[in-house]
Image (cartoon, rainbow, N blue to C red; front, side):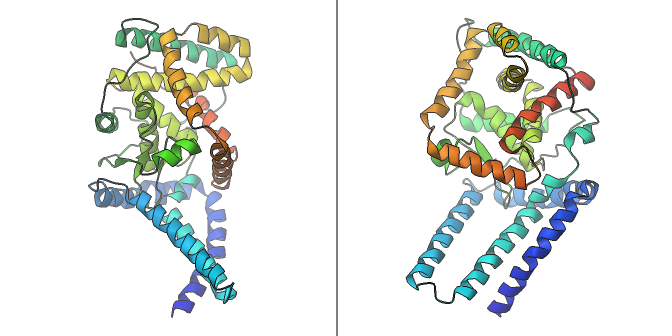
Length: 358
């Protein structure tokens, strides 16, 4: 019976590859039947089942898988590769099962209709439009910074407990009046990652476990970055699998919230991407824009930069390559660079649909 099950799972793997290829060509089908129906049901069920548990079930699941794989390899080596055909069948069946569960619970969202089409906005923009957007962000960032500190040279300090920031971000989603975004977030399910130290060395602020739909954040990062990090991971939880789309949603939710600290985190988050994009188009203009920022805002940027430099090393480079390839496989051909396309969404959304308040 076990061997029959292994063979069925192994044979199912190429069938899945063909099915995924077909689904990539039919985003409307994915959007209508999976993202807006089945996924909403299954994700809400996952939240109710796991949100009350104080630690990440997903982290325990990953740890169990790693331990299991190590044990499997140990036995394979110990037995000097006996029964290699059976062991190979086990490996293919295991990959097939994980591949199926990944797409069933979350991964099919990679193939849904792109967010810019759902919003009815363009992805093209000029340098002049980017400049206008960046200037607006700078004006609002500087004004808010002055409200939060006593001196323009001081960085904004977040005197919040991490659990309180979680609540603020959850409330930002729950109370959002933005009718353009589909954000049916009813159950808070954001947790500290048990692997925050490895995440720091790998260069990651957080992630969503696709098997449990729990959002994990790296609790070691500066508190100033936590609101947008949490909002980004919640965006993933809601079915926006692509990095640029989750970044866009995080920016919108935090920038449009009533809480000054969330709004400051969102404004500086959007501004950083805009300035980076401007630097690629016009380095001198980018430097001129940076010069307009309060020095305290730059101190907040510096705080984050110094944090990542502390953990910088070969692990980060390896993980960047691995994750970049993961993104390319999952319908994001730009890989890590897809993060930069959030600028196109932000510029066009606030030019064509809304204005940044406050």
